[in-house]
Length: 341
Image 1: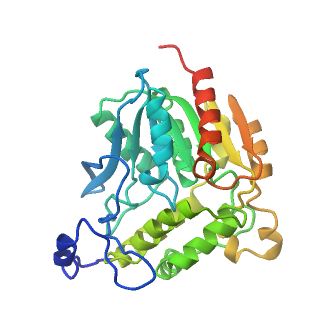
Image 2 (image 1 turned 90 degrees about the vertical axis):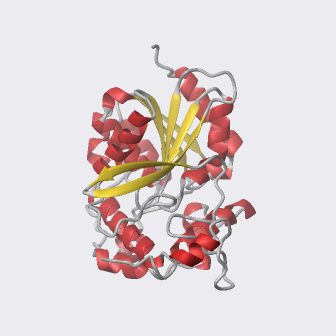
């Protein structure tokens, strides 16, 4: 698939610091989220992958408190970006950690290739290449949602480089395909992603992520996602999103949780009902998937060195919904399982 950039690039260069307002629904951002403000300095890592020159946007935030010599790498979810970790970056930095928050290829401030074979192994390798360039040999991983699947794959792929693994409402705690969720083709995903709207994103997140609740501060992240999806790079963004959804659905990590060797923390908001393909699943399948109050307990039994912390009544993103409560639990576990160097 080829998408010409020439028709929007001149205008983008003139408005790089500002969101574009093409219609009343909300802001529009460039294909690499140009115009959206990140909470910390955004840097870019250039590298070669699959015969292409690509770049990953990332934040590298030094310890603000007394440095403990440790690094936490944050892995964002499908409908999230490195920026959505803002409160976690602050909490971890103040606790003495160096924090790396990349945007994966296909997401947010990173490249949206015309053609890319998306695998969790490839995204893990890209991230490992970034960390190597930054001189980071060992780290703690904190993955949210789809980032939980990626963090799990990374930990399986590079076990000697991962000291601790923390998963925040990770998707992939079940195998939707095996449970009867119908397969969608990439073309079907693409058509679906072309129809993203601000209101549609807000309604989906309110009902699925937050059990009908909403906080005004969530609107910024809705605008971020919808603005990227409806900006001048809309077709390229939608195409990469479709490829990523296919990766998520067809590449389960569920069967390998038993192989994780490092201390692993599951941080689970129990009101979450996220499940890929739930919208087209038969009623009997839909009824049995996406129950995080059950899934957290089940997967904790599969992971050899696991700790389960549940947040009753919280949803898909407890780090955003109740950051103080979330970070108290996270930092307590990080200190408790701190490996001796």
